Length: 120
Image 1 (cartoon, rainbow, N blue to C red):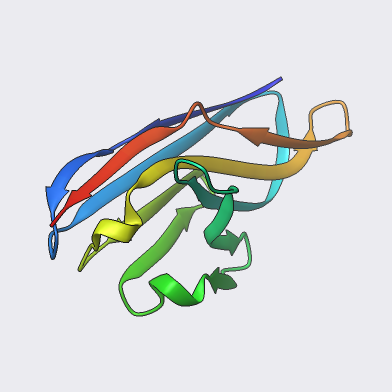
Image 2: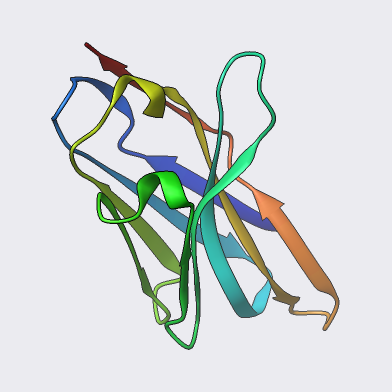
């Protein structure tokens, strides 16, 4: 099994910053990519940003230039630095990891979610 533990959510005023962190642990052989998704009330879960172990990144158009994703392959961690936050960024943010388990089977795991609230 692969577990993801998130931290760093909270409440902030518009224009402020927050940093989310996620650590993967368990029966991991390798990780291909890690990322952050978010889900606002009444909306579908959407990709915010993702990074491969090779360093390739992908961002939602709505966060480009404001959010930065980074990863540490040796520690199986991923961070999301969120600047210039807007009320529309309010959502539950979920960490995701995809890779191969110690038994050489593929996995895709989710964290428990962390709330980000941006007030105007």
